[in-house]
Length: 281
Image (cartoon, rainbow, N blue to C red; front, top):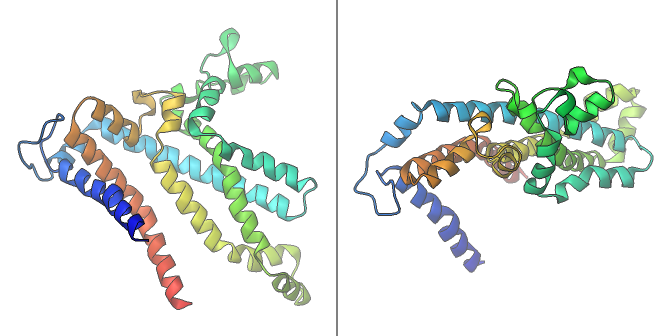
């Protein structure tokens, strides 16, 4: 127990402290900083159009990713919970993408989301053309307006199975007596799900929302695999990486601190809620 606490204290909280400290300095190279500049790096960061652009991209990616994974995961779990034939096979198919790394799936999706159209089309655009659905061809992540929504497709494909597993566990965790009691009271199937089963899934839905949400905010490897480091699809994690490669240490640390705060806004309320629930038990 004690060694693990020491490791976490040094490599998690110690590095967080080092990052925050560096973000308050004027350090731009591997050499030590000349001194502290306070919040100047953060002020400049929020005046940086490129950083604001990356935040907007992250917002679009997060919304589409969360909605896609939650809706698909819930619908798949509902189908399986209703006694869909071949459940074991479909459950394996849905969960398989989770076994693939973001880098590996990103390489495949880079080809699937090929932006070429017409005779030069490849990937999904070629498939649409073969099915005489050419009107569905589009530039995918190269679209300056909807590019980040397309970028969420690989992430939805990869993690909706995980959300399905969470919801399916929630469905299976509801006591059969509760369902029978509702039916004895005259509840229809719709009323059973609306007033008994769905409310029981609220904790599962919240957990899935928090997990998927914080994963989206830290998204880096998938975007690098699909589009690489470029302005159109840049999110804060990618901007941090390019800034660090440019040896602007203090600015990179400031971006990291902002990302940490964004994730904390999502995760901390969940942890506090869980702690209070544990106390009430």
